[in-house]
Structures are given as C-alpha cells and as structure tokens.
Image (cartoon, rainbow over all chains, first blue to last red; front, side):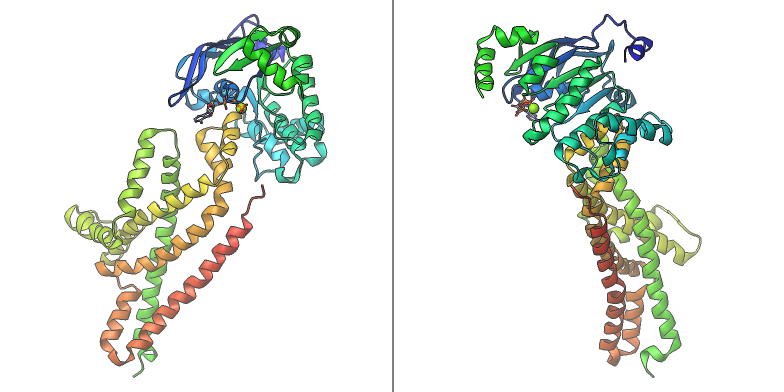
Length: 258
Length: 224
Ligand SMILES: Nc1ncnc2c1ncn2[C@@H]1O[C@H](COP(=O)(O)OP(=O)(O)OP(=O)(O)O)[C@@H](O)[C@H]1O
Ligand SMILES: [Mg+2]
C-alpha cells in the first residue's frame, strides 16, 4: 500500500489522505452534517459511532461522493473531490466501499463481481484480473464459492465477497457502513476478522459500526457523532474509559450495558 | 367465385400482412433503441436530458397515433418535403415507420424505466462505488437485472405495435386492413368470413408472441 501511495505523487505521505473542512449537508430542511472537520491519515483506522440518524452513513457516503455536500470541502489524497464524470468515477475506484446490505451484483457470480471493476474500470486483462480475484477470495476465505451467485451464499460470505470486490480495485482507503449490522450474530466474527487483518496491514479505513469490540482493538481513533455534529474524536482507550460529552456518556451507557 | 380462391385476392392479402410485418419489424427495432435511450435520459444525472426524455414521453404517449401518422405524411412529407424514398410506396412505408417508432418509443421508455425501478438502488450504488461510469452502470449492472421486469411489458408493446401498424393504411399503404376493406367492398356477402380470416391471421401471429415473451421473462429471472 505505502509504495503505491508514495508513487502516486499528488501529495506527500505526511498529508492526511482524507480531509473534510467545514462540511455541511442538508436533506431538504434537515441539517444532517453540521460543520464537520475531520482528517484521516494514511494507514489510520477511524471508527464512527453514534445514535441512529446522527449522520454516520451520510458522512461515510460523502467521502466518495455517493452523497453530495452543500458547503465545505472534501479532499482525497491531496485533491478536492471531482464533481462528476470520469474524474469522479476514477476517484471512486480508489476508495473501496462496503455496504450494510452487501449489494453484490445479483446477476453475476462471485468471481465476476470481483473482476468486474478491474476489467471494466482499470482495463485489466481478464486472466490477470481472475488470478487476483481468486487470490482475494482465498484471502477472505471463500475461494470455493467463486462460481456461485450471491443469493446462494450466506450473509457473512456475501459480505466477505463484497470486501474482496472492493479490494480488487487496490483502493487507497476503504469505507465501511455498518458492514455487520445485517448479519446473523454467528457471522459477524468472520467479517470482523477480515476487517481486523486489513487494519493490521495498514489499510486506511473509515468504519461506521456498532461493534464496540472492533472499535476498541482495531481503531486508532473513535469519532462520536450526534445530531449531525462531530462531538468527540479520541483514541479508543480514552473514549471508552473517559468520554467527555454527556451525549457520549449517555450513548455508551446504553450500548455497553448489553 | 369464392374470395380467397381468387389468387389476386390471396396475393393482396399476403402482401398486406407482409407490410404489417415489415412495419412492425422496423418500428420495433427503432422504438427499442430509442426507448432505451430515452429511459437512460430519464434516469440520467443531467437535467436537460431528463427534461427531454420526459417531454418526449408526455407528448407522444398522449397524442393519438392517427394524428402522429397524419403529421408524418401531411406535415413532414407534404409540407416540409421530407422524402425518405424515391419510390412512392416505400416513402409512405418509411413515414409510417417514423410515426410508429416515435409513438412506441414513449411506451418502451416507460416500460424500461419502471423495470429499472425494480432493481434495488444498492446495485447502482455499488457499481458507482467501484468506479463504473453512469453508462456502464446502466448497461452492465442495472439493465440486465431490469430484464425480467421489462420483457413482459415489452411483449405487450410489441403486440400493440403490430396492431397499430394498420393505421399506416390511412396514409395510403396497402397493408392488411386496407386490403380487407377493399375485399369487403367487392364481396359484401362474405364480410363475416373476411373479418374472421383477417382477425385469425393476427391472432395466429400474436398469441404465440405473447407466450414467447412470458417464457422469456421467466428465463431472465434474477435470484435475490
Ligand atoms: N436520502 C435521504 N433523504 C432524506 N433524508 C435522509 C436521506 N438519507 C438520510 N436521511 C436522514 O438524514 C439523517 C441522517 O441519516 P444517516 O443515514 O446518515 O444516519 P445514521 O447515523 O447512519 O443512522 P443509522 O445508525 O440509523 O444508520 C436521518 O435523519 C435520516 O433520516
Ligand atoms: Mg447508517
């Protein structure tokens, strides 16, 4: 990863990879992101937590512009996010995204899901894309499911395939929006395991999750959001033992008691 | 002498139905291409294109086909001098194709668009998230999955198009219904028989078409 980042020259390795400055977003009258300032450094794992409706998904989605913003700036790898067109498509190909509902292409096999981006976006040769895809599927533990269709896999397997699909683009950062929330409890572990190993390998990650265990041991920073505001930003040990705001204390008392 | 034992009448009947098939064939291809493009415009992120697509659908879907066909003849050809073929009959044929496909494309557009709406939005989001462009997302991810939901209504649209193509008779093409009218004029007492034969041929063409599209829709089902 680091090799690619340095070679990609638009910015120094010391600059944050993702940077939001004074970002505001409205859905009609609803002010869902209020003056958000956030930087994520290369190799950093940032976990975003907060009550439902606080704007976590929206924040995550603005970073690859699946959601547009009303004011402020977002830069990725030293460049402001392109507004549209091919430049935007190119940016998106550098930011992997994993959704709560997996969103694997239902009419394509798992292998085709993983090779589609490399072949169509990166114009990679089908054979080399296939080899890399098989290696990635092996890495997330579902190499034997390559020729099945998404509907034939369990939720945990589908989510791991979705992670492999994102990794196949060799992204500079990965965004996860509640990747385990749609899973049966017994499948949560297998997905978190893949994410933990990615974090350990130095992938830059922004993870919206309710998995406090993952936040504690895999995150470099925890961000707490409430009502569209970024209320706290602290290392996990500090955040979990000594939250500063009342909102965070209240939230933690609710999620940590069960 | 019996109507259909006279070879001239038989020839006229066959030729009338051949015109129907030719009108339907050419218009179906054009309407499909145009309709898919219009649907792409209607779901595109570009406001001008969305407006254009919506205007097309609202104008042509709500104008009687007879008016559109008359406009093609009297407006495009007689007044504006648009000639699509040196041959008089061919010219009428192509003017008819223009009118039929303009009209039918509006219906194809709406069938395709409602098919697109049956595909969960997460599919297009995931496609955009890996860097596919709008056109690639539509072509590679959304339209193939809209297939099942689109094919059945497209079948109905094709059947309607085939029957609608008789309207080109009103601007002078000797298609089946014009032939039928002539035959009834000459063989008044065989009127019922003539009706039955013409209706029967349409049924023979169109009933299998309906079943074929039903079968195709089932084959294209996508498991979720
Ligand atoms: N497309 C949309 N149109 C209108 N309002 C929206 C849209 N998406 C989200 N919202 C609203 O914006 C607010 C923030 O939503 P968001 O999905 O970012 O919250 P969240 O923190 O991810 O919540 P959850 O934990 O439930 O996923 C909510 O009040 C939501 O209802
Ligand atoms: Mg959310």
